[in-house]
Length: 441
View 1: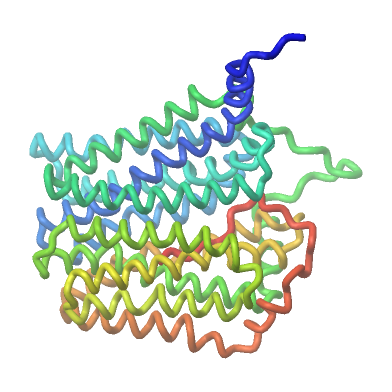
View 2: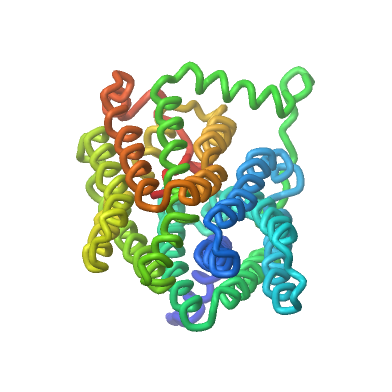
């Protein structure tokens, strides 16, 4: 009798896990680059122009193409295959991001040209993020990893990127300037493109042929499928109310991260290092909150946990900055905010998967996600204009009050009771293949 070498087992395990590991690695580096850019780019605009309005306009020009193109790219991803879409769009994002510091160094970067490059980055990021999300279920199956665990790992990767990226960006910007952060962002997108093109097995993420329809009838077109998703949402008051509420909070969160925090950091004298510390503290706490939610949230009443999470994660961040509190207090509030935010998306995802039948899950999720993200491009634009007119503190207070009203007083509406009644739900055979709409505190 002979004993098989342990190295052979390890090699087999590594090959088995290669598809999922490749997709998650590509997600990790591209999301980290995005988070670094989320601090470096607003700071670059703020210090070079001194204008909160222009800072908000840059955020709008990135996120508007992101939301629109991502919402409309589903058929292209299905037709071409997510693998090709992912590496091509990451390469395009890397090129556009690298051109910004290059042109600035040559003295050729005008503000309209910057807006055009930022819009290109956003338009490429949308399909790239979507393509990686689409590859997760296939990669999990190839790696023999349960889909629920793969989805959980994907969520942890996103939270880690939201922690490591801002912390790294704060240090980079403080020590080497915002242009260095943009160079690192370009390098991260390039690395994501290489991972998908080279490191993934060649048969992962290929386009699949659509099954023939019964009776030879043509498949419904894109707009008909879109209409079916909208009809379903219109007939489900809980999901529709949830999407509207998340859309409002996403708008306020975008205003906070794209304009209000950078302006606060400059006016308070704390600088970009403080932005990295605050974001890193919130991100680390959110990872803990997500893990805690995975362990215990199923034993608790969803509605109570959901609205408590929003109560902690929302308004206090705005109000503590408006109060000019000491940095230690600010960090404590951001840590509590991150912990509360960690509970939100697992509950949102569970409600979505329970209530939406599998045949329409993809289109309902895509529509819900686009509606929930529709306010993000406007957040920075509105906040920049408001700060220019009335100043930072009144805008922070107004946004904090709006956040509280949108998340907690709306909880008195009767449809929210179905959040607890729907457990085990309207459809017990749902798939986790689609990524749930997300709140972004």
